[in-house]
Length: 430
Ligand code: RNT
Ligand code: ZN
Image 1 (cartoon, rainbow, N blue to C red):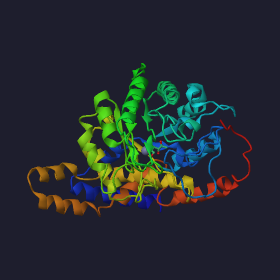
Image 2: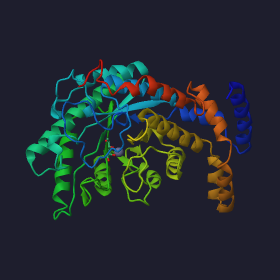
Image 3: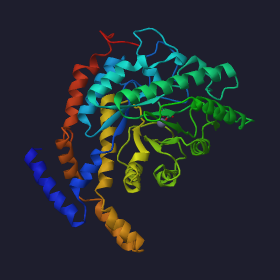
Image 4: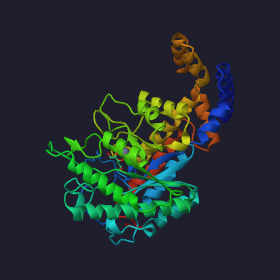
């Protein structure tokens, strides 16, 4: 598509939107202010760069054997650079503690320190990227029975507490060095395959561990803390310690942010409705946007009703200082860079669609009880020329228009990803 045609269709689209009272320029300005936090783990199937050979565990499953998985931090950063070039808009990068770099020497989880992430911090700084962080409570011999901070063995709980405390220091340092608060998200896999007799004691141990972790002073200017709930996992089908009620109660009573992952609820339960229910009572919300297919399968997100509804709630609630958008999927059955790009572009597109709604008019109709007018206008909005605004936005953001990004990914696959079956020539395996 030529630039001329994009400009022309954008102009016509702007006129059409203006007829409904929508200012497209204003929508694009607001879109630019919303960062999307890219999860580093799409690039290597949640592998990380530790020496340990422990299996992933924790109920996490990555399926597919597509070639080209990143094998070290340099490869992963290269892949993320591709994603950043192909997905328009502002991003952050969300790292897990297992993505540390230590020149090939093993560092156990309780000994991780900011220096092991200096490579990431410098890389992010050079790109003006904010960083987010996660302690890693899985893929470790001390989590092999699926219990960490709620473990009945105090020594194991203490080990994971030490990990969590070390991660808080790393997060604060990431925030300080990048100049933007780092969101550190706590997700623990703790749960049980079969029905436990005592459902209370593990939750008490979990709360006690979290209280101990959070009792250490943290520079709140540079780190924000959230707790992620879950419904169940593979191997933890009957009980999850940090269930939604546990996480919500904990976050409310301790004034922490809550992380809502779209794959962590019952199949007919939606995260989009929880945003407005929680934003006013919690210090903040982190969203892990994912696509559960029958279970927490972490498929790449697509522009489906729920992703659109989430974006609408983000926009309509209009409390962006209390809300962070992160992605959380890992598909190893397709080109991993393409998976990232599709998901990141989809999230951005959903936000744009939400910003292109005549929200003032819709709210006015609703308030007046004119549900006929509301329904009519909502249906009309669905076929407005958003694609013209999206194309213009991509072009103005120096990102590829339409499917052009796929050509770049295919070239990258031919030149780089496809050659990765050979041992790495350089780079660090931490
Ligand atoms: C697991 C949680 C969690 C993880 C990442 C890797 O079910 O969704 O957020 O996906 O921490
Ligand atoms: Zn998640």
